[in-house]
Image (cartoon, rainbow over all chains, first blue to last red; front, side, top):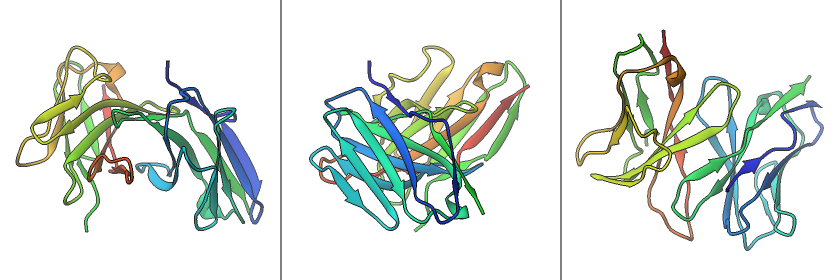
Amino acid sequence: GESVGLHLPTLSVQEGDNSIINCAYSNSASDYFIWYKQESGKGPQFIIDIRSNMDKRQGQRVTVLLNKTVKHLSLQIAATQPGDSAVYFCAEKTQGGKLIFGQGTELSVKP
Amino acid sequence: NAGVMQNPRHLVRRRGQEARLRCSPMKGHSHVYWYRQLPEEGLKFMVYLQKENIIDESGMPKERFSAEFPKEGPSILRIQQVVRGDSAAYFCASSQYLAESSYEQYFGPGTRLTVT
């Protein structure tokens, strides 16, 4: 069945370092992926997305990489800041429109 | 432009009572999605609605749960005869349209349901 999962449940980085959060998906037919950030007590916040016809997409301090060969997605955050501390989810859009979320990776930034 | 609104933010119900969760999508959005999040887990899809239509309810439990998105007013997720296992955060998301070239779901702050 369809599933989206993350390799690591927690990630701790030093302020100023780069962070890399990984995600594996199983449905090779998926054509759209999104990264969300969720802070405690809040709803998911859109960070960046990528379509399957792309390998890389950059935003402000964030980059998403898509490797369709191994069905792997990653989120890179440059110069990680304390405000980046949150749980990060990857999500896969199905053809019907619903999103399938991974379990999440909790990012902790040490000052 | 106000974001997705959900109310109440916190809801406490005793076992057997009914819970009604409301979601007002972003202005101009006609697609609404409901997701449930258990503690320490990711969000799980429940139902996808357009105005006056249920498009996909494959994630909804067969009993006690229902959802609607009327022509006027907010979308409602209704849980009858709540049980402790219904305790979770319920998130609503809305989107403007479903298209290949542009797609983004905007999430509300969620309703945290606690069943005692």
